[in-house]
Length: 114
Figure 1: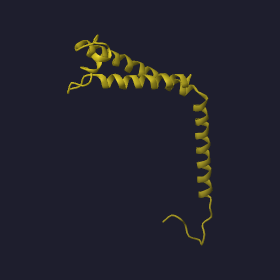
Figure 2: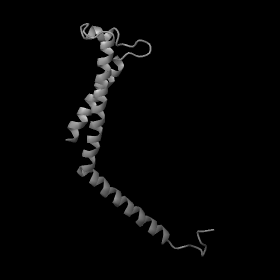
Figure 3: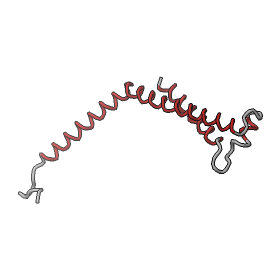
Figure 4: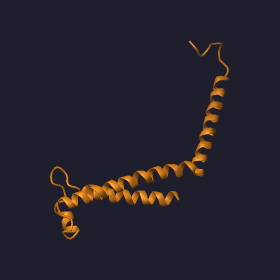
């Protein structure tokens, strides 16, 4: 499930990048000439801009939904539990190391604190 969602997220991201690059910017952009020629002249002027804006909005919405779904699937997976167990082991090991260091004998009758 995670792999499928990840592939869909990548595809949506690539399409969204393409649509954003096609949109008309302040300096006339690519939507004026390229979009009209790509779509056979069916989308010219305002129609091309309107279509590209709506398509980008839909893709952005799908992108955020896929991100949320990926986060949900990742949190429910066994991998998250394994990482949590690993964190607990690391914390226990650090605590054990700290106890060993604090129990070291002081040499030559001097204390470590000043």
